[in-house]
Length: 260
Ligand SMILES: NC(=O)c1ccc[n+]([C@@H]2O[C@H](COP(=O)([O-])OP(=O)(O)OC[C@H]3O[C@@H](n4cnc5c(N)ncnc54)[C@H](OP(=O)(O)O)[C@@H]3O)[C@@H](O)[C@H]2O)c1
Image (cartoon, rainbow, N blue to C red; front, top):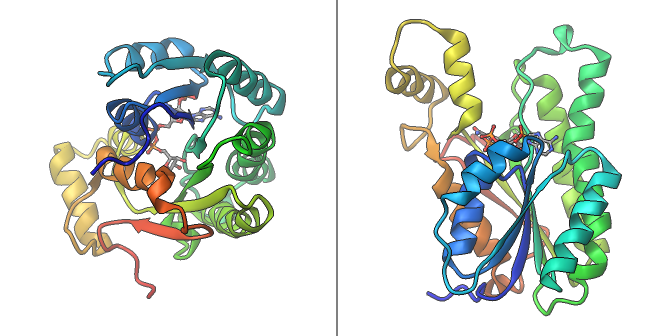
């Protein structure tokens, strides 16, 4: 199916690894151009250089910390100056903070909300004027099942995710006809989990370690997801074919969510 993304332009944050990189790759394969950012510019360019591009798809890579509003504004303006249009934004940059509430400092709480809320406000503020000129404008916020199913070991991250889910609904009303949706991720095999595996160093292989976690968490499909399995739901929500979908949340968790 042609998703109708060819010739369009999307901004993706946190694009050097995991879900962000897979999303850039999927967009380029569809013939869309991408403005891609991360904090480590060298790692970003190295990752992007290897991606195949369909048609005239191009990449604009930029070093940008999404919590820095001025940097986000500059990056967005540079991308728009290069491509002359912007059709969508994928707010993906982030990480989780593995700490129970009692061990989370006030500074860490603030950092979580900076990263999950202010980052999105920053991109939306910078991109909205350009998105309004598109015939199919869309924003996808990469969120977590934690937003609706909090975990004690991830107290601050769960709360910040819930706030982002709530904000996404408000944005879908306030920014209309720009469509604003969420994908809520379960456990996805990316840099985040590789780092946790290395920190655990319990002698098991990564496959054994991750299978154990999948079993403990009761993931219906019995395994972690792959970044590519998130990228396609994201670009489906960006697609003009999803023209009547806004304020929605699509779980991409292999059945880890317990809520109905
Ligand atoms: N993997 C999972 O199981 C899972 C589950 C639920 C939700 N999520 C969410 O999904 C998103 C993608 O995660 P992932 O698993 O793909 O992680 P990842 O492989 O660690 O990639 C994170 C990306 O975000 C960038 N980044 C981090 N902080 C940034 C900042 N302040 N400004 C700009 N870029 C930043 C990183 O590059 P630099 O470090 O160079 O900036 C990297 O490109 C995150 O929001 C994460 O919280 C993931």
